[in-house]
Length: 64
Image 1 (cartoon, rainbow, N blue to C red):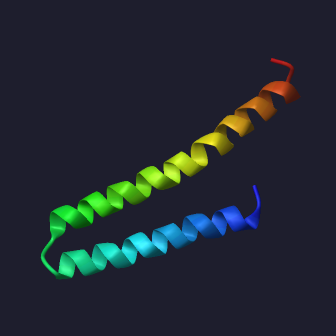
Image 2 (image 1 turned 135 degrees about the vertical axis):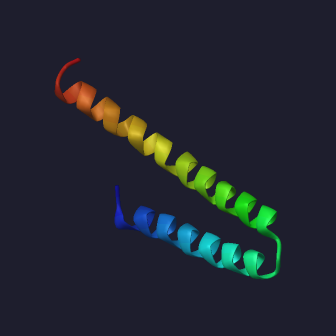
Image 3 (image 1 turned 90 degrees about the vertical axis):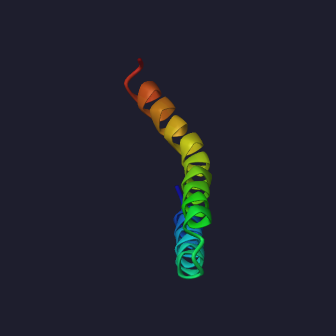
């Protein structure tokens, strides 16, 4: 995992936090919650292949 990947996740977190704050202050709590949920889903979709890669590395390391 390289540093750029971690920065991408951090940037998504910052963007979602700013959008969440703006939407809550404008009285759109439902859209703020959906924005946060969308951010979580996007990050999970980015992380799942890395976790799969980790499990395959561990599996090959221990010859399972």
